[in-house]
Image (cartoon, rainbow, N blue to C red; front, side):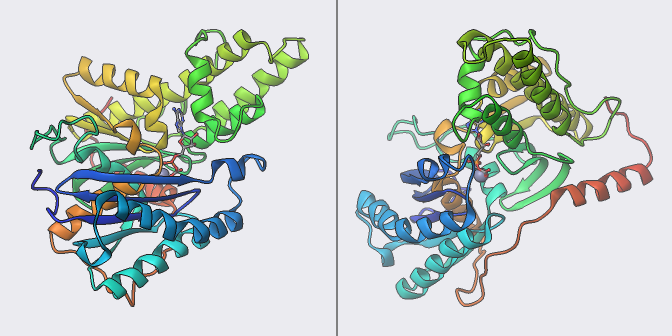
Length: 374
Ligand code: KG4
Ligand code: ZN
């Protein structure tokens, strides 16, 4: 086991968006990872409907916890702690997880901790990979401090991670998240919600040079990103193709569009991440969040890191999209250093706005004496 984690079993609860997810982690190993997804429920609306999400979390949270405990043969009071996502996310959805965790922690008399969803995404790679043989007691992990690219449906940010639950925001998108840009583009092409994974699959059969699309902010040397330009250009490319009589139901053309669009999004992510790694001299780079499941991002960022003598750490696929294991994992590391919340005081917290912090960071950067950067 890794000494970054508590040896006892920690229950993780995640309800920030459209997955009701519960896992148990002990000593950095995932004992069970149950995800009850609401994707089929929201699919007909083309996106998550917050009130429907909260109501479904209410229906599934207790059965999912019961299943996870049954998987491990543990009873509630046997747990070493309960960790729950309390920030950021949809308010009603978060409340279901937080209230459940507070109630169970009190009833079972076990320690409680609220964790940050994005910090948990970034920490997931520290846990034992799912394929690790049961006989192995150790596994490779990124060294700290390291860089983390957190890229999901609602976030696209770069952090300098120094310890569990401690990270400094280095840069972020000024507008859309990369996942949102992929989802909206796929939706215009008629792909099901969430479209990101469908764009990924279609792109593997396409030519990424077929459509020329913008690759982020030009002439910028800071760590700000933007996906609104590529989103507009993608929409215009679809409209132009339709006007020209191109049949987008024809599989090959759809594949070319997806490949070109995904390439534009991934190229910007890779370039900005490497710029951050050079600027802050960070060797280990974590790729985290739902979009970390993207095959091109994993491959391109890993290759770009290797070319500069850096190490990329793509999160194992089962822990990329929202899951309880990452919550239990970060919770386990925080419990191990003595962190704990009062079950009567923990609350769901409103969404942070990272773009504001980035603007502040840019102002600070402008005031600082210039360092060499690329
Ligand atoms: O982390 P996550 O499950 O939820 C949020 O915290 O937002 O990320 C969901 C996002 C969605 O935008 C989804 O389309 C995207 O992750 N995603 C992918 C892939 N798998 C999930 N995007 C591109 N390629 C994938 N393979
Ligand atoms: Zn997420």
